[in-house]
Amino acid sequence: MPMRAASLRAFVALSIMIGLPSVSLAQEQASRDDLTRRVDDYLTPYAETGWLSGTVLVARGDSVIYLRSFGMANHELSVPFTPGTPSNVASITKPMTIVLTARLAEEGKLRVSDTLSRWIPDFPRGDDITIAHLLNHRAGIPHRVTESSDEAVPHTASEMVAFARNHDLLFEPGTASSYSSAGYSVLARVLELAGGKPYGELLQTYLFEPAGMSASAHADSRMLLAGRASPYLFGRDGLINAPFQDLSFLVGAGSVFATASDLFRMQRALIAGRLGEGARTALLRQGGLAWNGSTGGYRAWADWHRDTNVTVILTANMQSGANDLIRTDLPRVIAGEESPTPRIPTFVAVDVPVTVLRRYEGVYELRPGAPMPVHVGDGGLYVDQWFLIPTSDTTFFSPQDFGTVTARFGEDGQITHFDWALSAGTYPMRRTSALP
Image 1 (cartoon, rainbow, N blue to C red):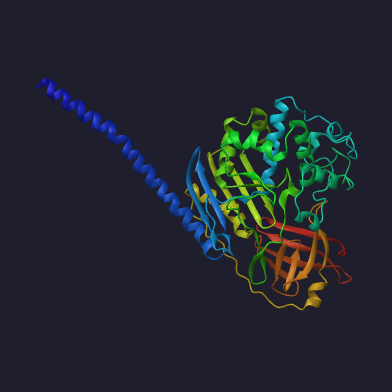
Image 2 (cartoon, rainbow, N blue to C red):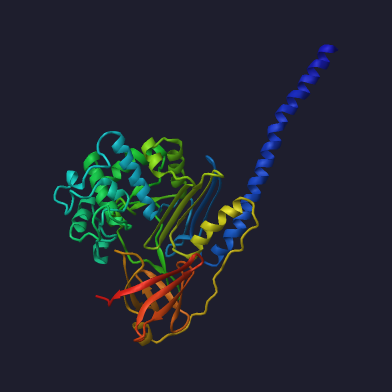
């Protein structure tokens, strides 16, 4: 009997020990279900009103706790956006290029102190431009060095160098800073020369394979990329197909297609040091990681908050003001704070005579080296590819960022600039010249 009693006590004790994890798992599942509900409650109004199209990923540490897609990857073919849909991640390509630079430097194949002339001897001012200048947007190379017609056909990094060398520098190398995608395309060519492989193969060797990014690719328009999302812009009556672009003209700067899950794998590999200490040191910031990209209708951001170890990622094929609001609000939802109310915009479009709209045409600038042509079309104004919907003769609504845009005039009655008002502040977009 004593042994039977002891056995019973042992059995009961073992049952309790086995039961404890199941209670913990149940609590964890309830917590996850609650988070999923709260995130869905926040995101769904944007999706239902047509302001959200893409994939949202939320993770704690290495564990994905929310992964859901909204909207359509291709409207004409009625193909839904799914977590496996590759979408262009635009300037999030740049951290990838930084990883390549760091890894090649660790192998002794280049140094960030190298001058550009070491790798591309005939580049103008190549003796004064360093790899570090290219990395930090301090080389003076303009942001864009191509025309729209150039951007509709595939380009190699070598061809992009040829475009860049035909443009004057914006400033003396190292004396200022101006965001430059073309500078990163020149850097991509340097990496090819140092690494002995095309840019896409370098990504595969040094980043995609080590991080497990199986759905990512440096893709031009000739590549058969399964399930690739199509990009969309806004017109007067809703979505339109974005003008065709072969995004290889952004090689090294904005040419990569990826899924939200692959961006998550990249960040976790970086944080864990699996991409090398040089890349980890170069990219990690005190607050974590905050990557952002936007081009031709595509939008992506990938944030890791170091203090909470929470990651939030969006990959989208439609540039809408909801994207930025989600980026700001979702961490609060995840933290369990009072859930922000989705801010669905309300505006009333009006008909404005073309003669009135034409007085706003011209070339404008928000930052040096990045001209923004404004022209009339579809009953409103196009700022490069962004559409402004008239709400009066002098005011416009921007669906792309939910901004209010107001025309300002000089004493002569001519337009001097637009005030672009967002929740974070008002930004002047100054007119610099007439349209070419």
